[in-house]
Length: 619
Image (cartoon, rainbow, N blue to C red; front, side):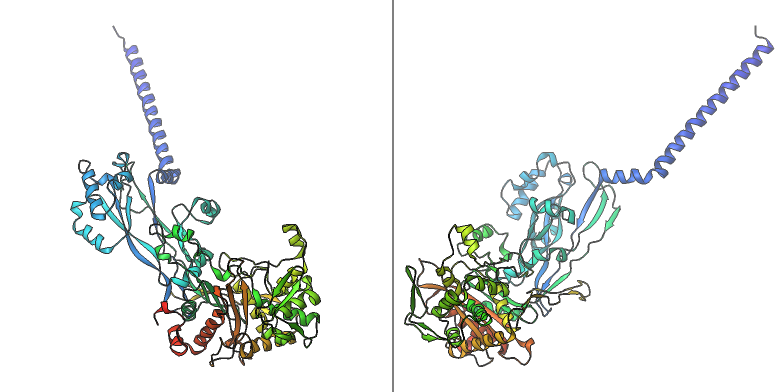
């Protein structure tokens, strides 16, 4: 039997337990509330970022690569054309129909049977990540798909930009081409924002100014589930793309095409240069290629194994400079007072030295030759004799370097070779042989071991024109804003070499001698245009013992001679490979080029006046 006291005690105990339970419940809800506050408010951003990282998917918004123009900034040379890519979202295709739809799509797109199945294995069937099936698809194909979309569930398409070269042929070496970044390139460029799957310039201007042209891709972040299916239409984050800048070249499209058509299908190169700035107006190398065909089957591989080496830019490739080197020899003779300019050397057509004959190009001989006449008639015997007996190899090398031979010009295009000036030390180290007077004789006429590029020889002429100054040749005239067209940056002329060794009077002598080559010397029958006065130097280099009847022909020249306005002057250098002896193709072509430049005519218009050089051009 319970007493009143015991009942009161039990009641107090019950209330104590209720209070304790209430406190526990309060504490529990307080902890729960704090935890929720901590998760959502204090650490909400951290967890949201983590969620986005784990289930967010970034989609790239492709930017537009900058366009490339010639110096007139009117019609682009390179543009981006919108094209289409077809993809399949496997998870959106009914599983019972998936293989049938794959087969229908392969028939429609003319793909190899089983191609899609190989790209989308069964382990992908549940995913909502698009898988690309075909790129560069026509608008007509996309239109058909849009009209028959019920027959192709899960099929989608996106737009992309295809790099398109409106000018190919001789522009191919200048412009270059783009391609997918490879693993080696990615290892080098990863820290500069390049990623796997990107495209970048591989050669030419596309490579040289890739960072300017490429712009910056944008990004869109969306939230997806574990099957890659988009959960919401909401865009979580977006970075807009930045367009690539437009590049404007120093190249003049009309002059480039004039040179291209004049050279025709002769292997060789043409350089047209403004000597007072270093701007390259034309840069032609034949054979060339078509960048638009690079991704067609076997096209690139065929170019690589082609014995004519169309991938080589011959304007910055090495050749023996031949008799054009006599310009440098003349400067050395005058500056060193090696022999009085009026003293003569007799040319009988050949000279015996050591155990062999050294020949002049004129086998019957020139007779008695002084410096001016020897230069005008390009007498080998005169320069061989003076080089061997009066100058010597060290002084010849000294003046070759004064004209910046054996060094890179630094032109803003990849692939330039530096040429080569041989020395006795080099021959002993490399060939384990001593330098002989016969080597000096060969060097004196630009033969033997010496190598120079057409661009370097254009710089030699520029130094003569400028009375001792060479400007660094360049191709980038300016960059422009892709939205407004406003100039962002502009290239200023930069002095590459300024001689303190050669006097202005020496250059004036060489200028007169070069003019005499055209009026009375080796170029008098090949260079005859009346539109402008030309001064130049011919050159003929032997190819080898198995091509004795063939030579590489040079003509390096400038015009107008004695111009009142130096800004009007241009340098033209032409080299033609494998020419039959006695056919002065380089000088003849230069005549056409100078005439076209100074009359503002195309090759076809010049050919109507002078006669066609090439049947294959259709005149």
